[in-house]
Each structure stands twice: as C-alpha cells, then as structure tokens.
Length: 372
Image 1 (cartoon, rainbow, N blue to C red):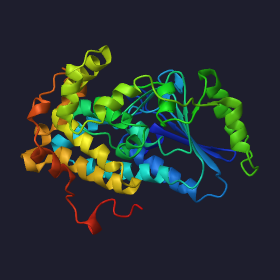
Image 2: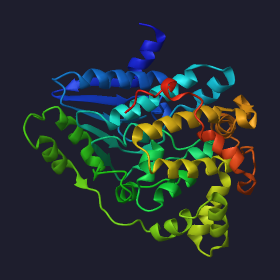
Image 3: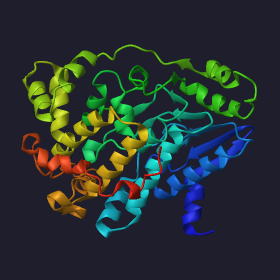
Image 4: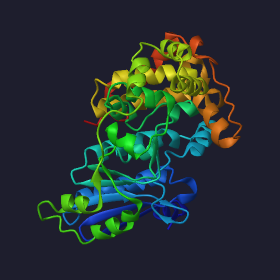
C-alpha cells in the first residue's frame, strides 16, 4: 500500500454495520480538516454504497483526541492551501473541484444520510453535513462559516444554504463568520434534530441493528435518541435584518458604527477584522445564490475560488493573494495581523469585485459542468 493510500485509509474509517454504512473522520489533531485524500475516500465510499443494495443508509461522524465524537470537521486543510498556492501545485485546483462535487453528491444522495454534527462544524464540515437527510447537533456544537477571516468566502455550497436562512441571517453568518450553537442552528434551518451528548454513543451503536426495510425504522430511531430542533427567530434577528438587508458593505458598516448597541458595536468590530475585498465579494455571492440552484451555486463558487488564488484582474496571485495572506496570518505565522489589500472596506470598488464572478471557463468546459 502506498503512503497516500495508508493516509487515506487512516484518516477516513469506513465500515458497514448491519444495513448502515458508517464513516468516521479520523484526523483528530487537525480537527478532522479535510485533505484531498479524505475527500476522495469519502466520495468513493459514498458512490460504492449508493450502488450497493445491502446498504440502506449512511451515517457520518468525527472524532477528537480522546475518542469518537467531540469534533466533527473544522473545514478544509488551509495549510495545504497555503503550501499548494505558493508551490503552484495543481492539486489545489483538484481539491476544490472534487470537494464541491462531493458536496453536490451528498445533497442529492439517494439514501438517507445522517450527519452527527457534534463539536466543531465549520467550512468544509458544513459542506459534508448541510446536504444530509438528518442533521444532528448537540450542546457542544460550534457551527460557523468563518472564511472571510482568511480572505476566502463561504464555499462548499455556502452561498446556497446560507442564502436560504431566514431573513438576512445568511448575509450575517457569511460576512461575520460568527459561531452559532445548536439552538441557533435549528432556528436558522441549519440543523434538524438535537441529541444529548450522552446519547451519541448508544445512538451510533444502535444503527447496526436497524431494519431499514421496515417502514418508519429510521424515524423511530430518531425519536428514541433525539428531539426536533426548536423553531422561531434568533434573539438578534431584528437587528440582523435591519443592518444586513442594506445594499452594500459600506452601508452596513456605516449603519453599525453609528448605532448605539453592544451587538452593533461587536458586529462592526468583527467586520473590520475581515478581508474588506472578500466582504464585498461575499455579499454579492450570497445575494446571487438566493436565486440559484445548488449546482449553479457550486459552479459560481468554483469560479470564485479560482479567482481567490489567481486574482489576475488585480495582478495578484500566490503569496500576494488575499486568501494566502489570510491563511498565513491565521495558521502559518499565526501573527493574526493580515495585510489586507485594500486595507479598508470603503476602499473596495465594484471593478475589484465583479470580475470574481466572471467564469474562467466556457460553460461546456467548466470543471463542474456535469452537476445538475
């Protein structure tokens, strides 16, 4: 077995227990951040199980340094992004093409897919859970799409699922990258059911004895181990809608900074730390995605991510790109002082933003042209 195959086999553990295919993300030191090998392993496994009549459903979970559960997935492997961008490694392109194809596969999977979203669920972790038939959260769930912190945008279908959150909460989550808990995840339509921590192990073990040819078996299992997420508006919904419905990022930040509330001051300070350029791109992304299908959104995001690492219209690529600089500051040098260009929200122009949405490929040659 090659070193790559050994890594793939170790970082993604799969087994069929009874009628359920079980996937455990097993890269705990990296909070199960997805590598290209992990994406390929999950994709191949799901395709195999999709066509296997003995497998009736799929369940996916993460693990932490102490055992199973405790962390789902913190996103994509951003250190790999940094190394690959600086080296001109073509696997960076493969990563996003294959990851987005996996996201689409999960959203359109023909069998029940249950995601145990315990602990950290961010970025790429949202990509492999938001398309699930059942999205389970716990009292330890910490959910976010924090990409503007690293000069990126909420990808993996983020434009699609965030834009469908109530009111303007999608814009708020996308621009600020704020972390939400299980209660807010349910209220915002990003989770279906809540499970107590103590029930995770028994619920997972019980999957192996389910008779999924019996009507209602999965629903009975869910009723035994979980409860439906609560509905209703989040406590900040009124303020979120007031500010994040404004037409542009400068309008949003100006209104927040002139407001007299702790929430507005906190939100404005958060936005001032994010990439000014990508805040503008992300607002446009979410609002365009509101009228798109998932496949259309993923193709748009594939265009966007190419421009993030190769921003030719701004004569920036590699170390000069906003994304590589953001990753450097957060995860490589860890100085938490990214040198954003432009440095301020008010300095970003439409001419800097709109070329992100021009596809580098003709429609027939788009790397995700096959998605429907």
